[in-house]
Image (cartoon, rainbow, N blue to C red; front, side):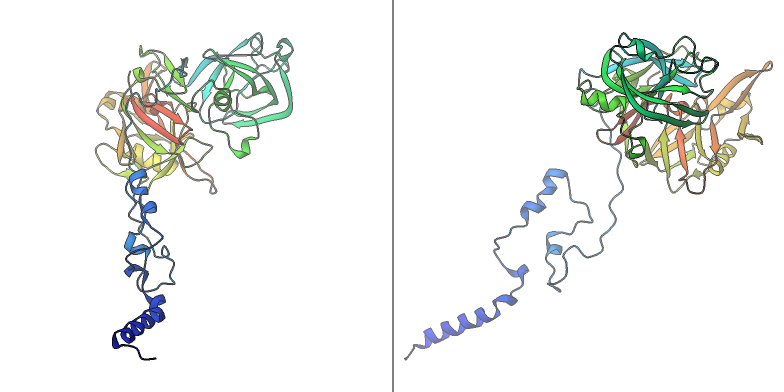
Amino acid sequence: MNLSPGVVLALTLISFYAAHAINIPVSQAKKSEWDPKPILKQESNHGPLPKSVPSQKQLFPRHSPHEHPLARPSRPLRPLRPFQRSMQDYHLNILAKDVKLANFQDKVYFCPVEIGTPGQKFNMAIYTGYPATWIPSIHCPSHYALCNPYRRFNNASSSTYRANGKTFDASFEAGQVEGYWSQDNLKVAGLIVRNQSFAEAILEPNMFKDMNIDGVLGLRPRGDADGEELTVMDNMVRQGLLQAPMFSLFLNRFNFGDRDSLLTLGGTNPDYYTGGFIVAPLTMPNRWRFKMDGVQTSNRDGVVSRWGCETEVDSASPLIYGPMEEVDILNLMLGGKPHHGWPRTFFFDCSKVDGLPDVEFILNGEILSLSSKDYIIKEYRDGEFICYSAIEGMICRRDETPVWILGSPFMRAYYTLFDKQTNRIGFAKAKH
């Protein structure tokens, strides 16, 4: 068969491209059935892509078609930047409820709670460092003086009581609490939480001696080691009493003429803080723990915990605690003179307290400062005033992570938001 020269040339070109089609690089193809644009559109939905995510060109390597496109080493992610929220952002719903708190000498903050039907009244300390709720039981031995003889829970007098059948024990700094779990209705801030688990204590330590306080209202998130009993906040959200698992605290100063301390369930109260919140993500799901960049003095004598430190917020702590060595350095930088007893206390000349530098806690590059009025305690003892640091060292076991505990001296300066919905904690300047 005779073919024209043009046809022969066409067949030759077709054969050449058919034989080499599999070697055409994907990056040189003008059209493709698979379009990467939908994946790259995440930039418009979730903000700009981090620098560690390869560009479109990097997704299709030229040199090694067998190499996994994301196998190359990437740059570290940018550090989390703090962000501000307006005063209204967290106070979004009418379900948020305010609870007035009483202040016992700047040591413990507590509120009234009713348990049972009809309600039996108890004064409950607010504990953000502990998940469970417990009150003294009527079955506490009569000879045991630490059980309040006037306010002990009698489950036989409640029509909504349900036995649980499990024992309860918990360790506190003051000692061990022992008893058993029960279930009943719990009322706080006008909200009735049905079938709430709580512990009836038949043995409790000397932790509320000479205080008008009966038990503990636990507000720490529940962890796997805490058993199956749901916390009060858990049940409030499940039963539709609150829109979100969050609460906030304003703590006043004892004998300073401040307005009442306030616990707001389900949101914040903008009347008690100014500006927006500096927010940090939680580093543990079952604690109000986050990463702080460091601690320093305002005169920049030096930075303690320069490489960052784990930090928790505990409303039941009357002091600020930190690793012993770091706290010693900080108090010496402030000019304190140590008393070599236990616990180690740093004393200051009361006439010079007003001139001390601020203590600055660094969070995501932002500074949360405490003045000397916040971190110095002034007491009248034996006919004279003494001044000492509210920042105290604690000894950590070798298997423990060194942690700073920001207690009520810090929380009186900063309105604190505890947000379990987004696993964050936030701080705004308290409005005293």
